[in-house]
Amino acid sequence: MSEPCRLPERFGRNLDAWSDTIETRGISEVIDSHDILIVHVEQQGQQVPAT
Image 1: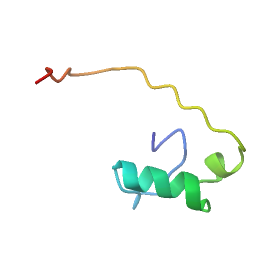
Image 2 (image 1 turned 30 degrees about the horizontal axis):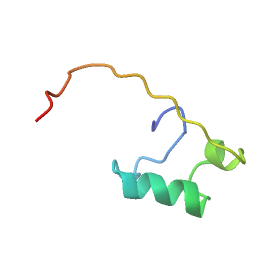
Image 3 (image 1 turned 180 degrees about the horizontal axis):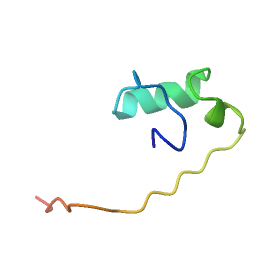
Image 4 (image 1 turned 120 degrees about the horizontal axis):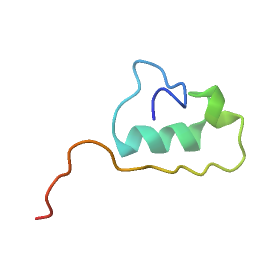
């Protein structure tokens, strides 16, 4: 998410940081340029087994 959304290096990698980015604005020009944001995530890499 960091690269396509052009998030800063200091951006945290958790849901609180993501929520702040969407709600507060002023962190990503890419996100700020849209009134509606839809994120499509495809699963890649290592799968974590369900517990």
